[in-house]
Each structure stands twice: as C-alpha cells, then as structure tokens.
Length: 198
Image (cartoon, rainbow, N blue to C red):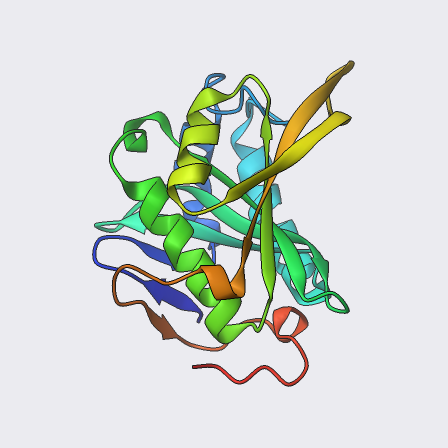
C-alpha cells in the first residue's frame, strides 16, 4: 500500500474504515465552504466516495490520499486533472477544522509534491483557490506555489460561477525541507513514462 511519510504526517490511500472519520470532518459546512460538493449529510456519502476512489485511482482520474497524523485521519489531499503528455496535474486539499493552523497542511503539501516530482515524474503541479479564500492563498504560497493568474467563472458552486486564482510549482523549483519516505508502489496510471524514482 502506498504511503508517503514526513516527520509528523503520513499520506496513504483511503480505506473503507476511514469513512466515518471523513463523514464527521466533511459534514462541517465551513470545511466544504469553497468546494462544489458537501457538506456531507449522510454517512453513506463518505463510504461511496472511498469506494469510487479505487476506480478513479486506477483510471488516472484522481489520486486521493488520506492525510493522517498520529493515526487520526484529518482530511484528503489529491492529484487530479492529470495530463500524461504534459507531465502535469492539479492538487486539491481539504482538512477538518481541528487541523487548521497546525502545520498539517504545509507538511501534506510537501509530501505530495515530493511524491509528484521524485516518484511519479511529474514536471508541474498546479492548484486553484477561490479569489475570496485568503487562507488557501496563504497556504499555497507558503508551500511554494507561484500565483499565475485569475480564471474567470471557472468554478461552479451550486448555481454560482466563481473566479479562482491558479498557482503552480515546477519540479526544478521544489526542494523538500525535510526527509520524505515513500513506501509501496504508486498507481501505474500516475507514473509518467520513463520516470526514474529518486
């Protein structure tokens, strides 16, 4: 099973046993405020997501990883919008409220970027943030993402069409500030042709 380990945080594939924790975290409207989904209203929604994630991972649609500290699932970080030809993907992340301001987000971002560049062979990872989401903007900049512009009416949220900022990190711009350990094999759909893990 794939695991990416840092000093305090581990990223791993989500399991069905994580569904109750994910439901509890994502049933908070403040957690899902900026997303096109949620909040969860039924426990089955979290379980259905975990089950769907297996096929999405194998097809290259989405590589979602549970963000865990001390055995506790705190949220999800993922790669999506994968382009094998261009060796790029977009990053998405959400954390339950109790992890906000604890440094978990920053460490998880480093772990995902290390996996993306050193193991998967990606050359670019991007991210979006709603133009009014100042906390996300600060976190992305702190993790090394460079602001690249504004996309107008990019994101549908209910009936609203919202603007987002787009950010990016290039492989040559990234250096992990701590040791990252990768255990297990990543899904084949996310490994770029000719990638040589370092």
